[in-house]
Image (cartoon, rainbow, N blue to C red; front, side):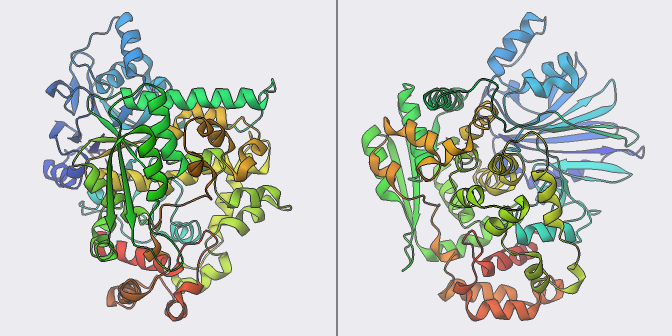
Length: 589
């Protein structure tokens, strides 16, 4: 897990080494163990390393293979690299390191752009071909690893976060109106390639891009996810057995492929509890678990310790538990926002940030339960969509959007008026062929598009802010492909996530399985009052906010009069959504 960056010139000039070094200063937390640079005429690459596999200097980057004329910068982990390495050795390749980075170089030399189809894991990487004077970049199937870029006629620059790109002088920092519509409608999800800034894009998940010295660009999707029933029907027992096997393999693989200890972020929900149970089932010893909690409010508990403690007791894990007071949440919140590559409104962003700070003092790698709800239909809105009737887009919108287009027009100032851009993109995603039912379409859209920004990006940003690698076995692409074939009715049984509950029945305390669906609790950002209310009021009444002119002042005033009355369909605070966006601009742009 690392931070990567680079510049590729199309105008005959050489990249500025100082530009690369400026970008690398914004990537240091992603890779605190070592740093490296590479330059050759029109190309310059930078890398910050977090040493997880092959801790020796032989796996430092940029990794240069002089014999093959290839140079790599890579962020991520390839879980099938041992078998790939063996296969490539049989084809005549020799290796000087024992890690996964060098395997990518040889795979690219052997299979060219099709190398991505051979990689099983999470990745964002760039490979420079000295012979062809071309730069190849790629991102993993479900966008677990980020990769941002800025492109014009003179140059390409890319990096693992937007903060690195914003060190460059010629970035267009104007707000993109289409992305703003998504930001305020899809709870801060802006589908790739867009970002909130016009001058910065992100590589699409499951895509590669190829650039040459003339500035010509090729782009291709290399993985398509379908959500259709298999030709041969399976019984419920067969489905449960196959899902159990695939999930078990995904969890064990993410524990074994590391030369350092791997822990588990244990929230108390069934997803993370199941990770601990499956690791124990696989014979893993020395299990290390970590849990965080916050202050209660009158409406909601701020921790789920009662559930995580039950799992710790059953499996006798080496457990660390952290209780964070609201005063620390508020004082540290700007730090978390500073580490957000894009503005993220989810209440648990600061929770992951504060938890990762503590966890990183003990381990460098953790497993986390993100993706289980989207793959196995665990959220409360899925059955509502499934059982409703009528136009598919309307069924999705009425149970998911933070605000409809009419309210969006009330929220923003006239300079950001426009079409209902979010309806356009969601309709196009729902209309894609290869899904049997309404819920199949929604779950596929979640996994391939929406989840990339929420929660996957959030977990990456907040853990890597402290040099902590997060692995997400529920987003193993082979597990996803299997789960998407399952009839939606099976997933929705027992109020959602039926397959996981069946697996958990033999492995977890019943209190963890039978509990109501929980969410990472951060009540102070949901029920906004007291010093949190004053904090957000100050942001939205600031001179900076007035000059930026994103929000209509009368709309702000309306929300401020009774913030607890203005929640989104997914129970988020509309006041927090606005304050977070403005605060992100104030800190990062």
